[in-house]
Length: 94
Image (cartoon, rainbow, N blue to C red; front, side, top):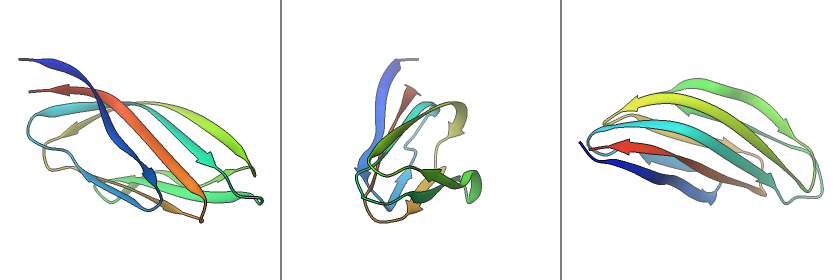
C-alpha cells in the first residue's frame, strides 16, 4: 500500500472534492480571507459540518489541524463568504 502526501483542494470558495479510490486522512486546512471585512465559512465531510459558521477576520489566515479519516467517495465541501480561499492537504493510501 502506497502512502502519498496529497493536496486535496487548493481553490477559492465554494469547493467540492470527492475522495478517489483508497483511504485518506485530512491533516491540515488553511483558510484565507482576502476581503476587507470578516467572513464566515463552513466545512462539511459527507454533509456533516466539521467547522460550521467559522469566522475569519478581514485580511487574515486561519490554520486548522484536522486528523480526519475519509474513505473513497467521501465528499468534502467548503463554502462561505466571497474572498475565501481553501487549502486542504493530507495523506492518501492506495
